[in-house]
Image 1 (cartoon, rainbow, N blue to C red):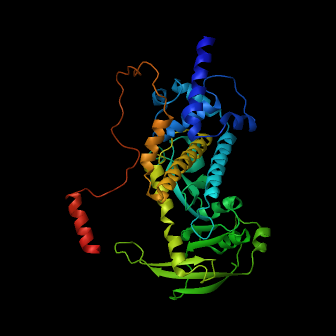
Image 2 (image 1 turned 180 degrees about the vertical axis):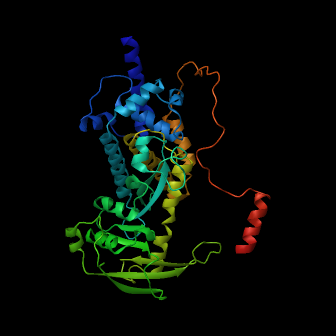
Length: 427
């Protein structure tokens, strides 16, 4: 028995050294020791468990029973589940920080940025659903509409990505009924001086922009719909501090805000027909029109849609729209592992884009996922018997759906005909 265990451990370590370490050059076991985690020498060490977790996410968050055909170690689903739950949350946070630092080192060595050597960041929020567990229901809350037991708790993920590489530099998971602008304040310490933050109108407030300026971070945000402005294409405005202090802000922080704030408003029109917005107002603290002309502000805010594409790829191709853990800590681990996988994929995409001298946004995300799945999988599957489902006579389940699907109109004519009509109408 001990001989077989030693052989299995040696096989796992050999696989991690050969294929896994090339794409994930981080010593997971050393990080686990640094955060105070201790374990016995078994097949599912922290490095092997994280490797299985990465492979599970890369394959679209497949069931744990499928990992015995995909991973470097033959293991039961229950053993893997226990090993994953045993890993501390601090280890996943340290792994994410290590991956972010690895991407930062790669980007700083290339000296490639989006604007005059300044790092441009994009912030936005997306949602995800969790299993219908009482603890998760209390932590994340139901969305408006479904009754208890007929829906799924929904959480929010606030992410900040690098506009040049698409890698996530900071993120925060939060309950459903929280405002992204308030949660964004917790990520301010992770931003660097001379960064430029691009965000939509939900983040555009006097408090947000002022606190960013105090850290040396400039803002490019769409003007909030409740703030009036003139029809001038490019002009400066002076905003005054709100008379009432927000409930979530301390008196000391509120009193430190300056009484006035100079903001530049840039107006431009969207020439493309069929778009929802035709006129866009952007508020920015880049006040110099010579160094940052209106065309540059327009281009910067145009990159904001890239984070929507990132969230869509994570939720559609990687299946982050519905997480599987049944505890708040497990959901947090899943979210962090999704972001780690995302950064690894963007790292591979950036290296390939540099060799072809093209933008990283032109590289296929799904094709990169498939390439990584091949590189990280073992060369030969373990000879295990197939699963046998239990005999459950008399089992009955109502043939009704609980998870609501997206509502789209039915296709009543060929897709090419609809495209031709769209081009004929909008050009």
